[in-house]
Length: 218
Image (cartoon, rainbow, N blue to C red):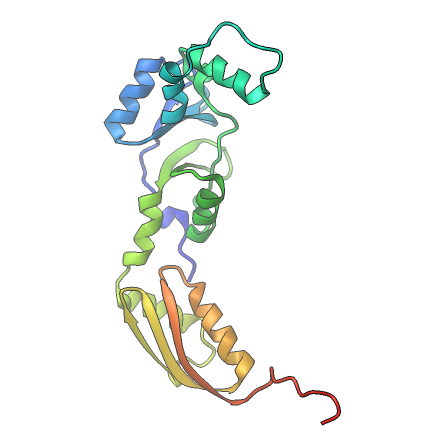
């Protein structure tokens, strides 16, 4: 069974309005102990994100008024952020969001690919922010009870009664017999895709090797 974002997300929408001041943004980050806040419009739809890196430009960028024609667009944007005083001026756009029905695996992949530690969760219909998903929420799937994890593993097996499963700290050891070698390999990959599985150690044996390549002429 795929674990969805709705099952692990935080119900608090960590966000500020577009006109929020620099100090209000810092205060929100400190209050919720986060490194970024979502910027929302008047209809509570995410329009961008302000991170600690965005705020640090205020101290790190000492050139805020003179812009060279040789500077990159990104460098120009850094100057603009350094001079900014509201969320609209400081934020990075667009906001990267996720919906409650997305799988935790999708969320993890998105966070890894975009190198972000939290995602605003939006209503799939209205687009309004309804919560926040943190990296720590995603990692909670790896602390699930072994009984729940085993139930999900057995749910993906065609003949669950034919296998013995042992789980220790998220590492799954499975043993049993299948007809083909390809089935044994596919079985391991199926289990690896179950949310909460740290690793799979297969002791599954097979009767026939359907992956053996016989040299021609023999």
